[in-house]
Length: 335
Image 1: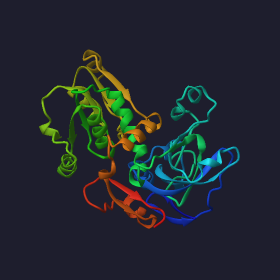
Image 2: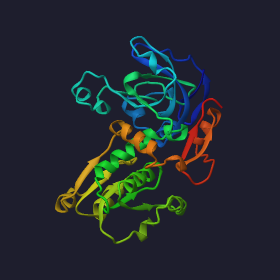
Image 3: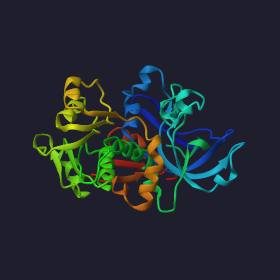
């Protein structure tokens, strides 16, 4: 089968590989759609930390945002999964340690991550093997584009849950990229008044096109009090900025990861009585994301700029942005 493989920094392409076979407790999924994210770009340019701390090494088969149809089940797996449209958890814990047994498999010390960590092949391929325990069925109302947005949506939903907005609360999101915009959508669905802070006119203009009229440039941010601030920017300065902007007694959520350490004066955190929340992984937010997509409370499809084939992935990872101002590029491996 065809799969996209990164072999070294800046080097990768479509390769013929052995198709997966469902092991015991697994299924094989025919991939319908997969998303390209910033983590994939970091693998392509060599900056991904896992490459430097031993959790990953080249060659890497990328792709952790996906949906598709189950076409094969392994031993001990319900054959009723065959033919069902699914997406799945990226984080695959050992299922035996204290964290896994308490439902926190996304924090398992020995976890693998689909398309990211531990050599587990990803979804930028025609087929993907996945443990049945990681599957989430997709209802008919969640199409291919939305199905491949469940994983980033799960991260964003968890960030909004961490912000804990009540109807009428004012929430500021730093960084109007894919995760930031999804945070804004979930916060709006929760009844919050949503503001966004961005760095470029293009990203702010796109946010406004989605109905977020309160989209600010760095020097123009409103002086209104913010009950919660979500940092989805990936800028090292943003956590300190979030604590500066949030109301005393408010909540700061960090979901963006900077390429260098962030400096935060924890005295300010304490003296403002701020609750700080960190978010790693979509795992606990996947089911809720599917539910909100299915009901139409949140529609992620406008965030998808274009859908390309596997042969275009290298160009996208190198910086090509087909399709206009939306932040997300999807891949249909069948093309």
